[in-house]
Figure (cartoon, rainbow, N blue to C red):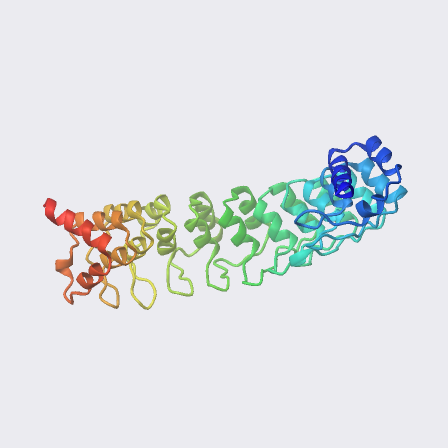
Length: 370
């Protein structure tokens, strides 16, 4: 137990960056030196190199490598090395030191992430430059098929994106395992300046679709990034009527994510039919909103002219969807708009309500109040 306590103490000393104290403790010769240098600690199985590098303690890192002979390629439970830590945390001096000591610049951690990919999750251009100038590959992909360029686009720093394109002008022409392009990524995350760079410098085809047939315009709309949606319309001639693999348009996808402002934009500015049908089931936007439980979105759709009595291919109204999900607020809005079980010719709604006591109580309360 005393040895374990000493080990924990030395790990804390390394984390705090006290080189003098670390040297004093290591020189005591009490049998814990090897346990500290060779051990793996914490949930992630980190080594002393991970702790020193993560906290940016260059002098301790040098001491561990040069005086104590610690292997710079030690990995933790996720196969992460010290170079991954330096890249991820933006500790440039530690990173350059490890590279100078011969660290493998394209080493892989769990899920096939390289140090350059880790660096691209941050906005430290100098660290990214150091890695690339040291030979880091821009073409490697992680297990999801994401390249460093995908990751940089997710973060959306236009300066970094410009730099990567300068280094490798064709790097933009890449897709993930589900066929998503970096343009999908910037659209989804709302990075307007990054989107401008990609549209100016890259050759993406308008309405490129991923494996679910989702376009960048759909991504922008369903996440409420109207400014990017407009940019794609103006610069890329995006088709706002394009459908995904299920036959849903941007309108339906915006409804699912309750993007009311985007819905208003599509209907009032682009002239999208608020009652447009989707999928083989002929679902309307109102059906989607009721199914997802978005009472506010139902109100938005109704103000835009949604047909409250519209039925899908199975004869279900939006009220059916709301009842099936026990979305009581939606039930109240739809009934207040004039949709009741009296319009349910087959009695399907009544049977459904009987299985949902809470929904039935809401409908009874509304009926009693009239």
